[in-house]
Amino acid sequence: MLILAAAAFAAGLLVATQPGRDERHLVQTYVVDWEHNRVGAMYALLDAVSRSSTSESAFASELSTAAQTATLRALHVLRVGSPHGSSIAVSMRVVTRLWGTLHETLLVPFSSSGSQARIRLSSALLFPGLRSGETLTRTTVLPVRATLLASDGTPLAQGAKRTSPDPAVAGQIVGSLGPIPAGSGASYVAAGYPHNAQVGQDGLELVFQNRLVGRIGGTLLAGGRVLARAEPVQAPAVRTTISPSLEQAAINAMGGSYAGIVAIDPRTGALLAASGIGYSDPQPPGSTMKIITSVAALQAGLVKLSTVFPYSTSATLSGYTMNNAGGESCGGTLLNSFAVSCNSVFAPLGATVGGARLVKAAERFGFNQPTGITGAAESTIPSASQIGDALAVGSSAIGQGLVQATPLEMAVAAATIAMGGRRPIPTLLAGARPHLVRATSAKVAHEVQQMMIAVVQYGTGTSAQISGVQVAGKTGTAEVRNSTGAPNSAKANNPKNTDAWFVGYAPVGHPRIAVAAIFPNQGYGAGIAAPAVRDVIQAALSG
Image (cartoon, rainbow, N blue to C red; front, side, top):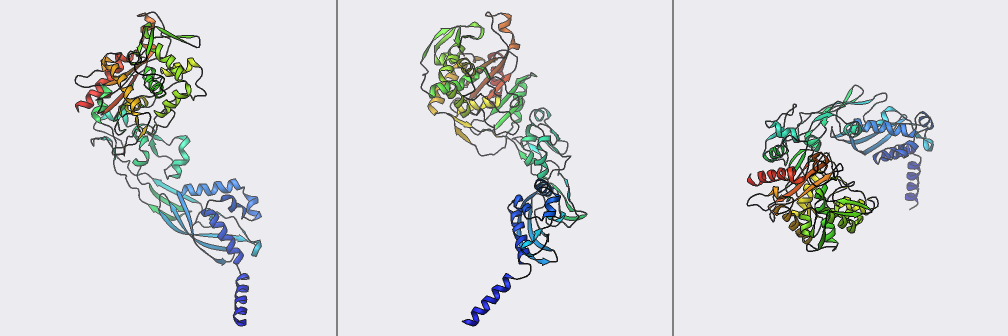
């Protein structure tokens, strides 16, 4: 027993006094801190001379630059060696985005010895595999950009020149390539892109940038030495949800006007067509917003379809008189008031609903939220605390004030009613799993659907009727300049004073398509937008 105890004591003494033990522990602490991205702790282990020559922020910046150059994802310590002179070699596994997994040695120099040992700064410390005096650099090259396909397999953009056999359709939706945007430089560099890369600026080229770029190739260099190489690999073709026939129908329906049309499959959220300013230039949605106002009022139990309102040519809110379009007198039941788009009913109703409930309903329909489509503008409504007084709430309720929406948003709103209150999240990727979220109850959606049917049957949207098909819809005429005037006066009828809107879907009960259209500064929704939506719906149902 005495002999064994003496042997154990001697072994412990040997380990405690083993040469390089403190230095090895120091280096192990340093590389484990690096493994866990604890840059501040790493800097604290540097010797005084190193810390006097560089600040912590400069040290962190150099590490970050090297990591970006290498497209670093993770570092793993494999083995910490023993001291050799005034340095210790550390075997490391380096995971990169471009060059895969590398196995490199990090040579860590130190100063002093024993418990006084500290890390001595060297350029070799910036990345495993570097030697003293070397700088980490790279050359990268993009493969040929992948092909964009329409839903039927028609190429929309292919090859380096991004050509298509259907240039009219491609020109509406593909978008363009250009230099890396100034604000996105760091993320692109970190992903391995060359500084002079051409990347998606808008349209499908932007939406699918990450899928289209493929595997970037190139060489990682330590000074003049090659640390790693990778060949560029083209990505597989990306099939989109765009239907060439419906995109062409939307183009035809715009008729060369500055306009926007979006068509969506309510069942899946698939964007079937997006032309003009379909999701790029939000505008006041006008009376199409009454869909959401009606949902808020019905959901709160403030009204029923049979609730009767007095006939009037105007309504007064916060001392301001709001006139009906063309000075018309309207009212009656909620259903009838919706069908004829009666502002003197819906502005006060919106004020009764209140800012909080109106904004909450709008947000459930997708306002103030990302669209799910990269590059698509967000539709907005002021927050409940900022929306303002009764006049401001009433104006918002009829799609005026500070409310801004795109045809994409309003097509989604129509699709939500078509789907019994479930909002489809838009997608441009063919085969994507449908994602629908509850925006309102099935009961309320059914009631709003009845109101939208009435719009097309006998209200302001009769020009959207299709023989043998039940269409539900809503007109919108957003005032962008004061159009108040006597009925049939030049001021009241000047088309440049209003944006024309229409949203609709069909067939009611078994919806296959929802469409929204806007024609800025071009009159009433019933006159130009409703027939445009009708034509696109008709093209979808006859295809």
